Amino acid sequence: MSKKILEVKNLTVHFYTYAGIVKAIEEVSFDVFEGETFALVGETGCGKSVTARAITQLIESPGRIVRGEVYYNPDGERLNLLELPDEEIRTIRGNDIAYIFQDPQSSLDPLYNVGYQVSESLFVHGRVKSIKDGIKKAVNILRTVLLPDPERRVSNYPHELSGGMKQRVTIGIGISNDPRILIADEPTTALDVTVQAQILWLIKEMKKRYGVTVILITHDMGVVADMADRVAVMYAGKIVEVAEVTEVFKNPVHPYTQGLLKAVPNPLKKIERLETIPGTVPSLINPPSGCRFHPRCPEISKVCKEKIPELREVKKNHFVACHNR
Image 1 (spheres, rainbow, N blue to C red):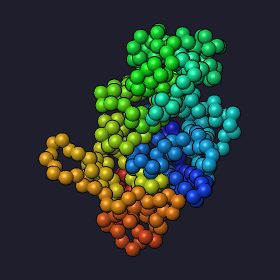
Image 2: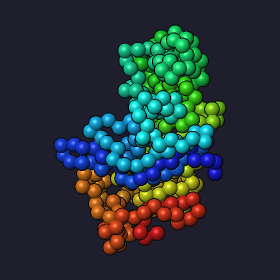
Image 3: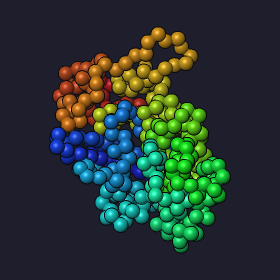
Image 4: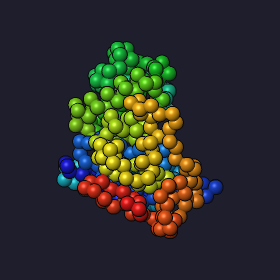
């Protein structure tokens, strides 16, 4: 494997609400290697987006990063992103580490045209001397992300563009400063199937062209199979399995991962009824003791209720948090 460009260790984020403390993610740890596509997959509400935002301190009140370390390793340096002051983290966020958020409608400012918004990112990080200079570069960036007629589109406001066009603009903003890491948070959720395929192809092309490392957040196992090199499966704020993508699909080890894959339709088989995972996702205000999956697990044992399983290597480069494996 290539060198580790990002190391996440014991990352824990809580949200302090009137209803109680929401333990959104607990002791999340994983490594991302330079040049790979690393996928975070799991059900809605499992903590994928919170994990991605916490990497560059993008957690707003009432949320708080309780503990953990996030090491970014560019060019021989080793920076703990969670210890950097606001001014320093802002120079990394959007520059070295950029985001594509899942809803382009809320990511783009309705008061400014898209040319201004792309050029603003360039200007803030010192890539151009003025917004006017940035507009010229914005045209080329929008052409790179295959936005039709970019010379005219730079003057359009977000409401004048389709969902696919808006997502292309957000990708353009993301790659505008040549980031080392691109975090794509469910980039195809609000798009139809044809546009989804175009956006995923575009992210692959950006990875090839610029050598960017991609962290892909999704709940779609089909997207994972198509895009990822390695995958981490999350459940109720915890990582339960990490492995190369082919290993996860061929030999899933954790009962939750097995349940997820059984719930995916297989077009090559005639299936009368898809399997389901019994029960419901637990409350993160009062999560279950021990393993958080034990109330829904078909292989539960006494230790599952009492002790939190540690993520351990069961095969080479295959890590699982399960007492029965």
